[in-house]
Image 1: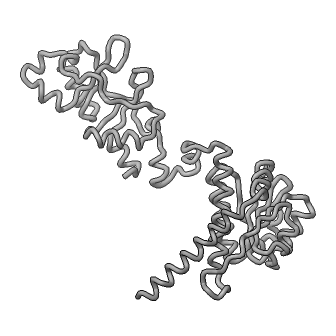
Image 2: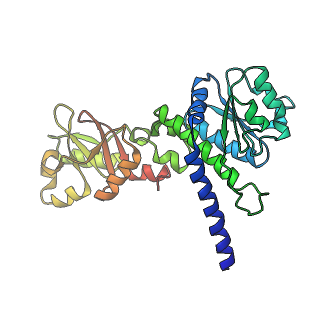
Image 3: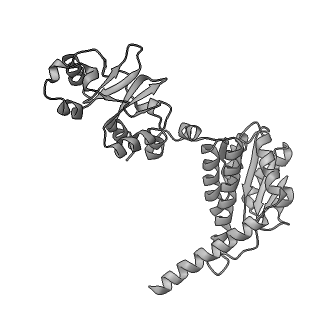
Length: 314
């Protein structure tokens, strides 16, 4: 068993050292690649064959989900008609460890024929791919983690990291925010965590006036089904909330009181533009089940903890 752990440790450390070399070796070509992508009015066409193709698919997906339109094009399919997907408004990002992958020839020739900017990523500076590229990103000379130099391991890890570096640099330049990210990730737990309170809240709220009798407040609590009601002043400002706890504390003579006499003043509230995750954290920390969303002190919606649970936030 120890021999397996030794192998795993060696592989990871080999790749980690290669990533250090990659980071230390970045130069002006990286900035030139960013400038080419920013200058394109179309998409980033990412391509590669074999293992490089798998990495290319991931890089294209990362770019697309972080604000840079991108598409993977398989080089072999490109030779059979898919070159039509690559237009003069695009920029090509082509990956090949050797830089001599024969399946890339037609794609490279297409970019040269139509003057489509080409960013090449390879480990050999004198390779066909890098010689033909407008910007050549050279991977450092680092051994593959297999120990025999035949299995793409270190090289694909470096290529993937370089793609991530491009995507994050572009993302930061575009000031890509969590809201933008949610636009491209509406599903799953990630989308739920980036949802806003306004996306989940209900605009039909349990509300009474401060001078309303508690008989009216109890009716509203029962009808709306949230177990609470908000209390408004004459100007429509949310001044308090009535919960089950308030009812228990004022049980003696409850029906003879007004809403203002029973309510808890200055309740916890949240803005509709806040992340729903922040609302969930607030409810959990205060051990409450509802929050009113307010704008300029006036309630615009109510969020129940069950809304967060249904959205898959926990």
